[in-house]
Amino acid sequence: MKTTFKINYEINDNAKLKGEFIFDKKSNTVLISENDIETILSELTALIIDLKKKHKIYQFSFNINLIDENDTSKVLFIDEKALFNEVRKYNTLSSATIKYLKVTDDGEYDSRIWEDCENPLGTEAILSLVSKDKKWMPEYINFLRTCDLDHEVNQGGDMEELIEQYGWNKETCSLAIARLITCCGQHGSEQFEDLLENGLSDYIQENKLLFLEKLMEEFKYALDSDSCYSPSLNGLKEDYLNEFFEYIEALNNILDKNDFDKINIYLSNYWDAFNNKK
Image 1 (tube, rainbow, N blue to C red):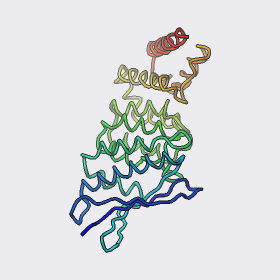
Image 2 (spheres, one colour; image 1 turned 180 degrees about the horizontal axis):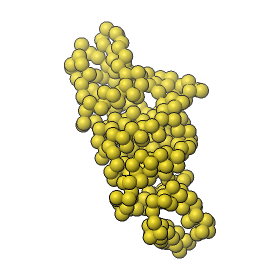
Image 3 (tube, rainbow, N blue to C red; image 1 turned 30 degrees about the horizontal axis):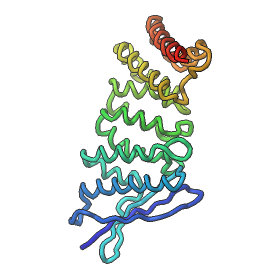
Image 4 (cartoon, helix red, strand yellow; image 1 turned 90 degrees about the horizontal axis):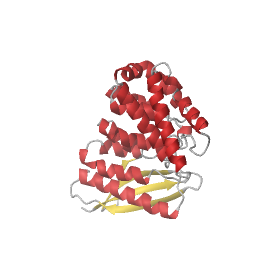
């Protein structure tokens, strides 16, 4: 019995641009196999790439159906959450998931495409990885950086759940630091202070060198990528330093003078190197 998959999709809620995309089910089993899920991910990714060539996309939603040769249709996945609940079952789909994440990260308004008014597209994809293994934390942080965190909804809760799951370690420490700076958004400063009260402060005291290393890595990323949260290197050095130190005011009672001196030297050297090139 020949069966096919059909993706019904809609882009940009105001324009209501709708369509469908059909492709063959490669496996001969009645059940949906791992290879089928990989095919769905691959075809979904290719569809988004093609649509982005034709439209400026800020929102994309979909559902996926299985159709048999008698034209009987069965809904398999109604949205991204349902699809990636299935993806989570397989450890071999990480590469396909990362490819999907990369094509959904640049929508019309220079931030990640939205699935609906609350969820950035790719949320369930990255959570399917990082909730299984903390080695995916750098990719999760990069995902957050592509989101419009000035209009965040569930991201703070997702971060808290991951920190609760894994406890304090270098991966969750990096997440907390990113939340303070390049993933600050609406509530980053408040959440960072809450995290300090919930174990992060003790972790910093016990792992000060690691924390400072990760903090400076975050500064470097912010500066190298010209993040919207990064102070300008083109202005006065004093203003640049003051702005960075405002970000880390919450650390005033945790770090000592030697720590702040190290940070000051690092940031000053970066400013000097940039401005000496002019």
